[in-house]
Length: 213
Image (cartoon, rainbow, N blue to C red; front, side, top):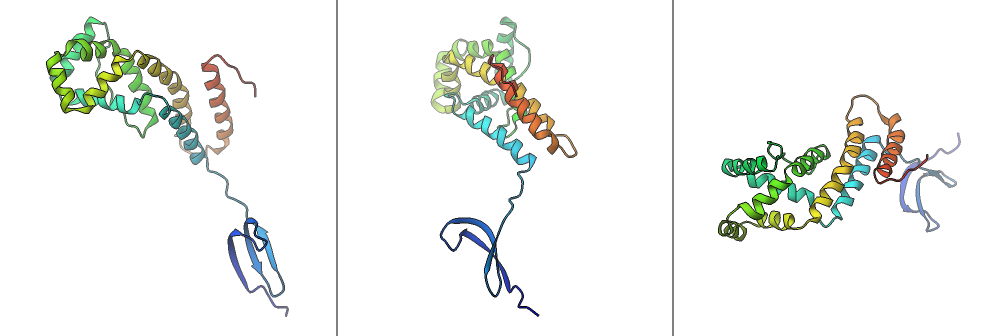
């Protein structure tokens, strides 16, 4: 009976010639036979999250932190009924929606669209409240004690904030539709390629460009 293969081992990093390799080596009595490994395909869930994480990383390059701004605003009014009442009263003067801010969860993309939409709807009231309505002495006192209040005021003083909010708001419906597709039950891997192409196409068309597949 011929001498059988004695051992199997996974060779990591380099083969015998010094070149990088990703192989399993079968050692027999006469030779070492390299067998290439077949890498496992990327799952649809990990690829989906990769697309969304790339979009989120792009937003982090903006000189405006939407996560921090939305969280600061919600925290400022959350525990103070008097502040909320003042804001709603100012909102009536500007004919804004009589609704309170929505809590943003930075780990959930689905919350970003409604949060930004609500901020844009009451933005005139927010600017009036923080920049004009609040007494100067009280505001100065709060700014000295609380960095959150200072960040809100500094953000609202810059007119670019409207452009940033509108820009992010224009992207969220496309990303939200893509994400909701893959929250369904059952196998969805067959939709991954098509939905990725649709995502890229729809994103290009937002800014007037067209891409033919």
